[in-house]
Amino acid sequence: MTTVAARARTRTRSVPDTEASAPARTDGKDHTGHPGHTGRTAALLAALLGFAVITIDVSAVNIALPGIRADLHSGMTGLQWVADAYTLMFAGLMLSAGALSDRTGARRAYVLGTTLFTLASLACAMAPGLGALIAARVVQGGAAAVLMPASLALIREAYDDARRRARAIALWTVGGSVAMAAGPVLGGVLTEHVGWRAVFFLNLPVGAAILALLTKVAPSPCRPAPLDVPGQLTAVLTLAGLTFAVIEGGGTGLAALAVAVASAIAFYVTERRHRAPMVPLAMLRDRTVSVSLAVGFAVNVGFYGVVFLLGLYLQQLRGMTATAAGLVFVPLAVLITGTNLISPRMAERFGRRPVVVTGQLVLALAMFALLPLTAHTPTWLLLLLLVPTGLGGAFAIPAVTAMLMDAVPGPRVGTASGLLNALRQTGGALAVAVFGTLLASNGEGTFSLTGMRVSLVAAGTLLVATALLSGMMLRASSTSGTSSPSGTSSPCGD
Image (cartoon, rainbow, N blue to C red; front, top):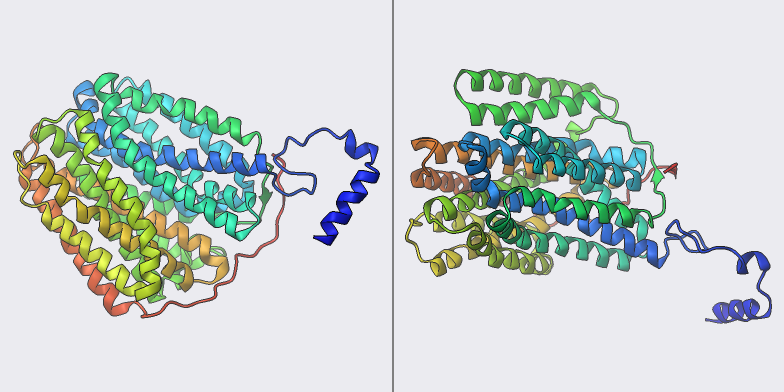
């Protein structure tokens, strides 16, 4: 307080002409060179909007799929690719997107990702046919992969104080949950009253707003982060080949499966020999890391599989409007938001392993609880049966993420986080591929209730298996005291 008062008195006595006449900074920093209030607010809002829009583009498009099917005369295979083209690129490029953000600077990476995402959204909205829509979704997914790590990096750079940074990240997380709730409703309302193309047009003003906000954010530092191009290419080929094999089947599917296997072997060899591998294989030998990744994969198979199944079930089998179908998911998203806030407290009280195991078992119960659904199940009962779906994954993921972060050295935290997110997105993509194939088992034009039940049993069984694996292999208490990521940095010229 004494120092502050003395400084204030000194300023009152004599204010240098250069300071008094200096124009206000427009780079998002105050006179000390640290992020100012305007720059912090702009960075947080830009990060929130980016996370929200890439989340909405998953949930809203799922509700719009029947509208796309009717307008573009697509079968179930086409709908699977509309959903998976986005998710696959999101998953595949997530592994190196963090390194790209470090090399170019978070703000520059965010500008690039936002620009690509906005242009790809325009291409989706203007797509004359299914092929053009799928191609544009591929670009959208790649842009989303760039946006995700860069959004968190923007927040980390804008908030020097750890407490303020924690609050900002909490707002960022809640923003994603709100977007998850709003996505199905927006998708339903827009599809029903305007048309499915409006779901993509909605991204254009959001993208423009993000780019405007970024002009108030200070340039980000660059860090030397090597890119593993061979590893990235073989990872994408592996995921794409596997998904193609599941969706297409037949002789073409077998050829795609061969490509996936060959690419997976090449990925393994590349990561062993690369001087700075995208996925350090030694890290995967840690049982906490490997089990955490398996849990993330299984949880997304269950959750995103249910969202995909129910989006079609509600509209194609029950005959609900797109708006009504979207509203069904709102209580689910509210439950997820609340449970995300409770999970860390439960982990502190009971330990992370019991929370991770319980969350998976609850989500497995959700899969089996939905088996009795028919075309005439009362809506109130459906909402009740969805409660375990909202609780299970949201209970497990915060605890498993914290456990994974504690299991790796500080400089590997970003790599581990990217790998977890990539595996989670891969789980969602494969769920859409496999479940979509099962739904179409009795013909392209008919929703298969049997196919939905087989899908739910498969997801539930997988979750029980990973829950047992977690209980047996995870340590009762997590490793503590990881160090912060290190590395030199230099200003970026953006």
